[in-house]
Image (tube, rainbow, N blue to C red; front, side):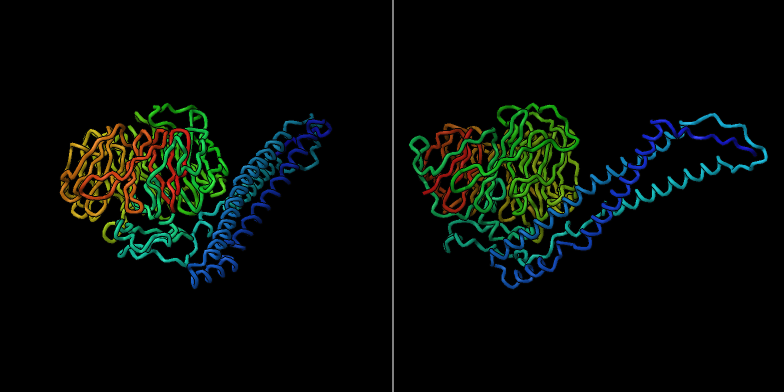
Length: 593
């Protein structure tokens, strides 16, 4: 077979330009491939999370677990290692895009050169010709194969399934013995156990966070121990108009109904409107805004605004922290994580919330995950996301319709359970796997916002327009139900056999926790969205008009004081040290002696 050999017209400028572009793209792709391989071999070889320096500090911490300076050094080295890992992964993702782009440009450029042809000369029959078609086919296959091998090898190296940086190192501090009450922080007087309930034993294994640290801070909407603060010397009088005992008052630029979280001298809260979502950090001593970080929309999220009523707003959900990172969510359906310097770490788009009041479920941290309750009109779920990466650990569908309650993690028997409430059902899940453990129907036709409470083997769940129900956590039988006074948004406090709460329409009530019998009831001028907090042997419960009802616990209604903030409030008090931190409609306040 004789094949006519066409010659390329190499003299034209377009030909030379395409040829050079192809060469440059090929060299560029090779360089990127080499850099990707070198980057990943380096991070795997050095393995900073298990570096000798870090391991030496951890070993020292095991022998001296109360050394806070040493603990801080370990934390800083760990954060440096994790930042190195995420920087490396960011480079990998960018490098993959550049590598693929370079290879595409190279192939297109060289392929386009075939269009530049000149008329062939009359062939010499005595001159044998190679089979050019077969040679070209073989060359194309070889180039394609080599390219695929290079790309596959780079992808395989650049995208490891798991890095040692994803696995938290062993920490010297053991998980607290859940058969005994956890130790109180140093600030707690020896007599506190007589005035306040023991903190619930919760299996928390967050790196570098001890039980003492957790109890001395305010990492969740309801504090470190289910409506209980270990503060002492907390004021019982203040005046928002005269400024008595108000140490500072700081305006928060964007509105929000969420309760701040407190960690080691700093307060964190969110604000949002139709176009902006911001996380704020304030110094607890001065009230100064130290930093504020905008939460950009997560990948895949629509850009249009979400309509919500003024009663809920765009920042109703309270943040949480695991002592290593901060987590926040907004009415647009975004979940974001930051470090304590305000640097965004990751974000997840949960979906566009579809319910009458907007998304308002607060977050909860459990071990190395953050728990999200996303009950909507359709396609609701509960899920756990990896605290370090945002990767979904598990996700369990829920078909109960909308609710505005939040996940409640309780230690029941010898294990932990995460309990969720919605119309009409209270459901318990395994917080490690998302497997359903049990369910009880008791909240029919209710608008559920109150968080399930737990004490002495009983789960308490409530909803406005439904009931307040007590459920045996072991047999899962309903022990009693009350449909008279019941908390709607407020989460009740259980203390020494009594249950305390406020209602949406302005009642304060106390029931017998075992029988459901009403012990006493009083009425206020405003309703209660805030939850009661037990601190320094007293109950603090704020109404929506900014009036704090300070009560003496007991079977008789005894009002100690009723100081006024001079500002509307729907947030739960944060009580740490000797101070109360109260969020009003536009300001955050610190009240201290």
